[in-house]
Image 1 (cartoon, rainbow, N blue to C red):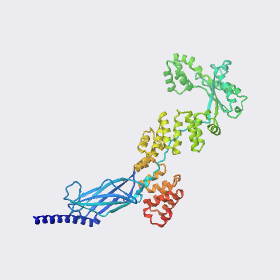
Image 2 (cartoon, rainbow, N blue to C red):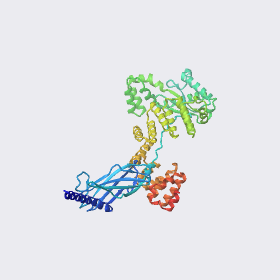
Image 3 (cartoon, helix red, strand yellow):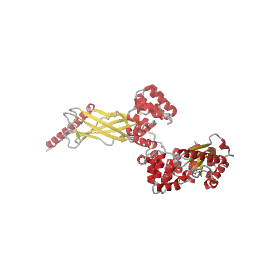
Image 4 (cartoon, rainbow, N blue to C red):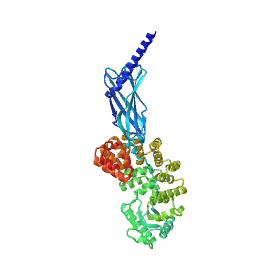
Length: 571
């Protein structure tokens, strides 16, 4: 019995030693495993750090009874983040469902995963932790560094809002007219005395007097258009329309004889129409004449006035109605007095908004905000307009736009919601999308942008920003179109189109606190143009010293970290 126990112990020990020997051999020869990582420097895209690892095992390496677990981990100075998935491999005699690696022929694996990016990962390493197991025994291999990381250039996307201000319709000069007509008897051009007592003539006289007394209105021109009805010989009609023009012209000039504005050259203008076929057609169209469709068809069929007149006269019944109801209305002179109404000056509007604003119209109130560059004053002006005209969508919307500019995003969104309750138009949808974009609510922002009936440059810009955050750089570039901007250039960089990005950035004005020049430095590093990179980096740091600090840990410049010129530029 004792001998049997000793034999079992020897067998068990031999088994354990054999297992340990297999694992130790795998660990000892772990350097024979070939790893390839894509990308070779980790990059953040769409808020994640993706990686693809391929591993190749040589022949005679993988123990037939062993299981190997490979766990990628991003390690940085004060912590580490493991990838969610691990890669499990097994030898030929292991009873499991993992990928099998042949002992005689070797084998390979491909691993894909991603992990959420954090700022801590800017200077980090991708490390592979490998653990081998055989039976009850396990052995940890030495960690394997696979790649550096993490390039975080995608996080430089600008997410500020681009709200749409709804414009005012203020016009300082508003055209208006006074109109009256002088009717004439058939074949006559003299003005009858009763005509001058007609209501429209009396109203025109009063209008001229009122304008002349109003300092805020100015006469511009007076146009007299005289007509003859299209029956009878053309020569007669030409003479009649000309003579009617003379009598009506004398009348209206007499009304202006004591008005200074009328003494300027070109103030009175005269137009003569010998046969008023256009007026004839208009009167027939709005009449109740039984055969008016036939008359209108004749007018469209014949362009010769003589033929028109003959064909219409052939319709004897219809012609009698035309002679009594239509043609008399065409024997006339029409007098139009053109006037400009002059609104308040900019100074007057500003004074009113800073004092007694209730004298202003909504258009003047909205316009007043364009007269100041002070955002707080703009806000007060729009808020005043919103209080006075709360049902005008523009007042509420524009309050929100200025609140956005002042960084009060929640209050801006509340104003946009008030505007939406009045009118849910595309501008308001765009602005609610911009508010959501700034707050980081990208799904909601995208819903607003895509719900617009017609995309705007602003909404396309917003969708481009969202596309960058998703890592969809082609889509971002499509949304930005040909319009140069920081985000468009960034999308080109992230897509790998560095030459186009460089051209675009060189053409931009840097109103982004040094970001344009920092991106130029990134392009320079990617194109291995050290001089361009250093000059751009110095310019970025001059605009904002924070770029100097940021560059020290930006792996975009990893190959220059030990370069004396780079060190000097970022110190």
